[in-house]
View 1 (cartoon, rainbow, N blue to C red):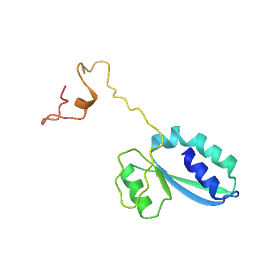
View 2: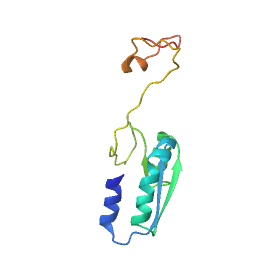
View 3: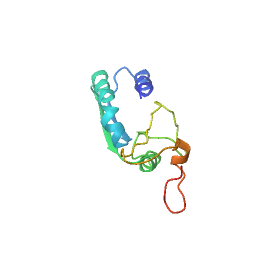
Length: 120
């Protein structure tokens, strides 16, 4: 996101207009507020619109020019997209303390048995 801010800055000393961004709810709540605050401070004439959604819908909206850019999770597949990883997010598996997941590995967590039970 910071690279995007720098790229916009390089284009013009007085940035104005509207930019629309799509992202997931978690990024919207935890990542965007300080970035949007910095953008507003650096470019007071720039209006930023934020839309939340899932990756697939945001990709489609960017492809259809309904959004200017998206901050989404990988993998992303789409035609005519410029994809640039910006952060590496760590995801964790959580369960109640009563759940017995001894031997569960990240690889096994994504494979489900035919009856819907976890394989581990």
